Amino acid sequence: MTVAVDSASLPRLLGAHCTIDPDRLKRYEIPERGEPGKASGLVVPQSEAEVGQLLATCSAHGIALVVSAGRTGLVEAQRPDGECVLSLEKLNRPLSFTTPDGEVFRFDDAAAASPEAAADALGAWWRGLGQPPCHDGVLEVQAGMAVDAVNLILGALGLMWPMEMGSSSAASVGGCIANASAGANAVCYGTAAHLAIQAVGYSGDGREVVSDAPVWKPVPGDILAINSAQPRPEWGLIGTQGVLGVITRARLRAYAIPVQREAALLPVAGMPAAMRILAAARSTFGDDVEEFEFIGRPALELVRDLRGEAFRSPLARHDAPYYLLLQVKSHKAHVDLAGMLYEFLADDIGLAEDDIGYAPLKVLKEIRHSITEASNARMRKLGGGRLSFDTATPVAVFGDYLKVLEQELSAEFPEVALIAFGHAGVGGAHLHILGSKESPAAVHAKALTRILFDVTQDFGGTFSAEHGVGSKWGSEFIARAPKDVQDALVAAKRRHDPHTVLSPRNFALDRLLRA
Image: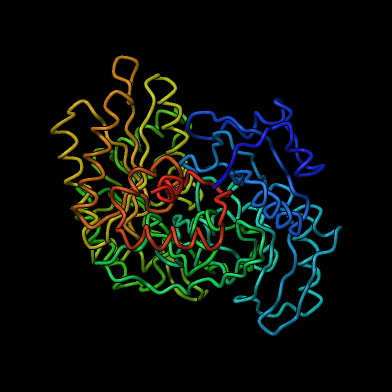
């Protein structure tokens, strides 16, 4: 177990890249969401090997660490509570690209100076090869690279890493893989765990670890597709949320950017009806259903209030309880994808012209990705805080789940407005409950959380879909996760991090180990 180490000793033990300067620590003590924490120090390794050395030193001296990546998480995993912060921000360079035929481009210092320089260098090399097809190629990057930076580089070859989320400019590759983050494209490509080929890093006691990624297979509708409350220790560093070790580099599977994409915003009377549309879309478009997102009316209204006159909706009416963002793709230029989508919506689904919200894809994505920003703005205005949840159920019951959840919440708390949106294609829901100065969200937090998680569990769902468990939901993990899942994680923690230096409060592992 970890022991108390005088913070003044940290620079001596951890080296020149460690500081205890309070002004330097502030940035790492304030997460994007949640209450500020308190760090004993900060260490910013400059190389992957240094990460391993630091972990070995921390294990030997019982120095507890929390890992800082993009700091965009919801579950307080990166909020220090006396631990030293380990930041991977300097591990942010591309390393190599390998074509399916085995040709390798290695990024030198000049090419790795910025994502733009990397894209230019990679593109020039590719053109020199005669522009061979490169989908299924492999991009190797350090774990601190932002998702957007990865896609800027791959874009030079007409490729992408399809990890789509609202925070992709900050979210790191390593953090997404460690969390098995889903994102909007998970219905088509799987989670970040499946978008990787391999993750390399170090265990909690400094040993090198190589973890092979699982292969994505579409999940039957009666099985949970995303569940970060059930980590898989056999995946090693992938999906185990940084409690077994630290990812320092990853090999990513590159996908061809579709030749065509078409999407529409659709009003629906309820989520059960929405899920029938998903089943029909899969029957028509198969694996080319690239996104299937849902937006509750309160969420859409928040975006409209935030944008004001700049808000442009493709729909003539805005009185539906829910809206769907359906996106389909094709890798064939000659296919009339727009016509196919219209025929599906008008003829197969029977939607009226006014109920098919066509708009440029960028406009539709801006609506979807503005919801959290709009919720943040409303929260600040109301001044009563917010409860945020990230749940999932099997797709087969997802529509009924949301219907019952609304009924249960309104029956006990009629004044509560549920702001719901998320990844309906994999059964994932982001749920916000806003408080006010007169009725702060924290006042009824325990009762609201109990109702929400009980209903989720009744539908075979999980209280933590893709954002992890962290320290925020540690008690729920103890109360709700199957005992075999808890036992397997504890056993893996003892093997990989015998002195419990890495994120000791995540999953309430400190309490589970004491027990």
